[in-house]
Length: 468
Image 1: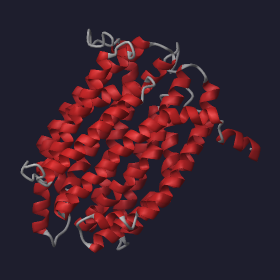
Image 2 (image 1 turned 90 degrees about the vertical axis):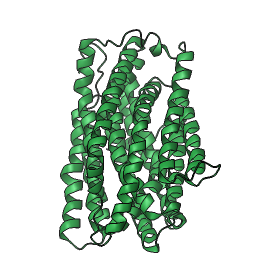
Image 3 (image 1 turned 30 degrees about the vertical axis):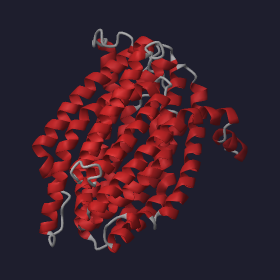
Image 4 (image 1 turned 180 degrees about the vertical axis):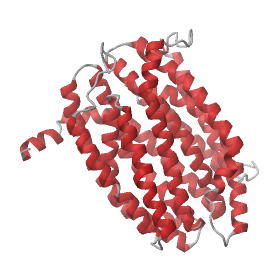
């Protein structure tokens, strides 16, 4: 391939970037504000104490698995919704919305049941420090109380995602963004009032942080549902959506066949990431505290390439649904290149702020220094994550969900987790070097993703007659 062809493939026109930015900027804004408030939440809890911060971090590892299951479950129907919208089939989008409703109810019941029965035992897996029994008991107490309150927020979160994901797939990214922004500011204000006893609410600490998060999720759900139902002419999929919750059997089978690998992928991938944290926790509670700080900061900057993944799924899915395969292929490469370029810029920002943000936390100098080093590792690998993310969402947009399952989840369990387990259990390697080795394994995923994009195995219109 010549250099000129490479440039044509990777660099778009002004109209292309204007189109991409129109889709991705609202998603970035919503996610950035949400993650910024999460950072402030984390700092607020961290100001109360290290044990409180660590307890919340461990409880959120379980919530992370639950949230990713919701995301994965919605994604299967979302592939079809984007393609139905591209084909201008409002009834098809409506059926996808109903499928998500049923799935949100089922996943909520499963998550609440598991956490009520096994939550404390699961959180104990992350507490490995033979010389800190008292600290472990305190941390577990904070984690348990936080998780019990957070269970009340699982249902509104799942329902919000049902609406918000369908809105994005049909081209409206502004309403989810607006609702998300309002919700995160409600969360921030309530955190300020409830954690520290500003306003006479009793200084609830960790419990106050959980209550604030749950209430903000109800606010987000209320804004989205009221707006959508009051403006049904703008959102035709919602018309008569609740008149019947029946979904055609053939479409249900089709979505389930394509969607279950995505649900299992997100469930097993998030569980794999949680087990990674558990492997790192073998080096002590200080490592968990440092990982909590570094991940909260890195999540704030990762919204750029993660949002680009969501935009890629929407843009490519609509093009495939409109039977414009060649434009979809052309845009896939340009979107991947744009995502990597943006992530390189944000990686530089992460490296610059790495020494300063951990200093805000009320914790030890050792934990702050470790968090800074972990952030530098993350920053150096961000372009890798970005390209892998683009490949994942491009392949997923064509319904090749079994391939994405192998690409994402199986890789985490077969490559990343064994590396971390072996290095933490059987070597004395410094935890930062262990973390670096695990992250660099993504070079393998980049190579696999490049091959799959080039082979065009993802080019598939599923809503046309005969679509796979």
